[in-house]
Length: 241
Image (cartoon, rainbow, N blue to C red; front, side, top):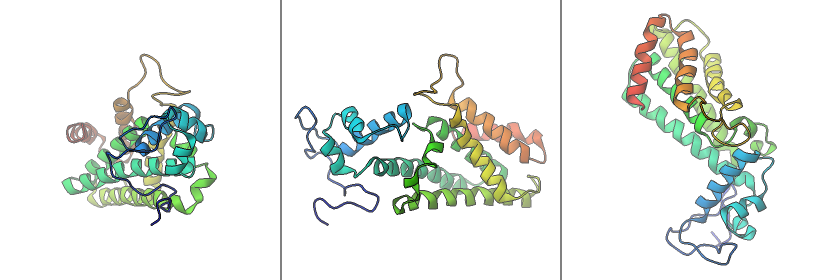
């Protein structure tokens, strides 16, 4: 691979940490991986201005790098976005693996997943719903994003189906239930934002409270016996503090 080659998602191949990177806008060099600083700066800007309202030049200024240095690591802002959403997906899918490895009833596993996903959505730095409207999301470099999203939908649907089979959940369409539950999680971003235009002021709900409410509402509606809900909530809060 040539020194200026890019990976399929538009990023430059890895460089060893601790080496001198591309120079900053003020002419100084820095030791860390510039991609981390670029990604952090882009996340903040996406939160404040939206993806469509953010430019590469603004990302360069916020990260303290020259614009040419930003382009050295990422060919466009969509390449930065691809890395951010891939990282977010991995967090949820890693939790899914941990939940399934731990075991428990399907209802317990489902509650843990929905609560965790809702909390992650509240903490995500910018509106995930805006991402779905971007034309670039249909490009090949976002194929992994869609594959992982589909995998999550199927996994939650399997939990619902298991819960129906165990007799703890009402008879329902598992796929439709999964889509609605996950959409409820993502829907919190229409009004919950830590920073940016829709940032909440003093006295606002915190992510943990919102996550519990969303899980109570969604999973609770599927339970045959709603008296089981407090136990599911307590287990989730103990296992996933």
